[in-house]
Image (cartoon, rainbow, N blue to C red; front, side, top):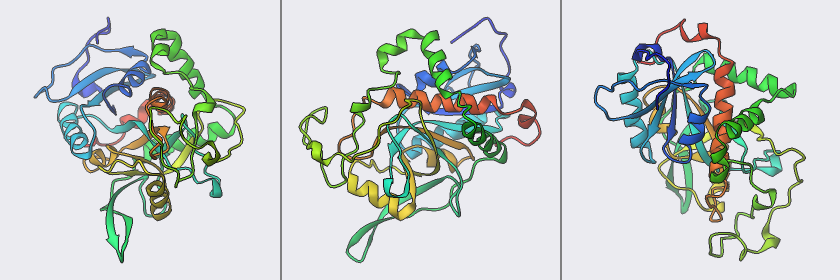
Amino acid sequence: MSSEHTALRHEDYTIACICPMGVEQAPVEAMLDEFHPDLPSKRNQNSYTLGRIGVHNVVIAILPGIGLSSAAAVAMQLLNDFPAIQLSLLVGIGGGLPDLEHGVDIRLGDVVVGKPSGTFGGVVEFACCQDVGRIRYERVGRLQRPSDVLLAAVTRMEARARRGKNRIPKHLADMLEKYPKMREGNYTHQDAEDDQLFRAEHDHRGGTDCRACDPAQIVPREPRVDSAPVVHYGTIGSSNVVVKDGRVRDQLRNDLDLQCVEMEAAGVLHVFPGLVVRGICDYADSHKNKRWQPYAAAAAAAYMKELVSMIPVSDTKSFLSLR
């Protein structure tokens, strides 16, 4: 994409936003305050969109496919092409792991942010293993935690939310006003009745929706008075494993204390640290469908914009790049 902005150098970009192509790419690009002309890539392996958010020059790197290896390859080439990158955010969609018994009321369209807790750096790579006749899930290796600059911005975001100063809905509204065609792509909040959390043991009964499923198996939840995305902070699980079973979902939640699962972050975090932001598009069970994906992607992108806008420009010039 181009604009009338004078082309910058590769070295002028200090923040990277990494997202999958397609439904997640569009809202991330829509959050840019301005677009910059393309710059030549040394090996033409990655696809980039360049622009500005607030005072920061941002490079958006597009993942061509799902999976950890694809994400790692993009991350390595990104650092070769943009050597001054100092902060990175991984923005996209994921499956939510609600835990109503312990007050974790994650719903479709909410946002989960990977925040360090205990020995976890915000994201944990997991694998399936056999243990005395039962399958369990365990942590694999250790992933890098987000930079202190990003975590400080997260803390400011949390404080702002407690004061009722949540600007994520404004960023979503601005996106639709600027790009009204995105309404046709379901980048608006979906109906609450289409947000159904079934009991873990109730499998999907076929079809593209849940009309054939047993409504008695829907977990009762209090309706929300506000449709704005709620932001949750906790541990995100990353793996090449596609989780689409409620029983597996709950076991992962219980074994590793996860709030979300996805399939790219660990690949990037093996290369350099970053903050993972995921919009919740399903409940990682057999009832998953694509209806909520666009809005969930937009909610994550709106969180990213708000976070980046809160980072002082001095915080991207006071320490070494990720290389």
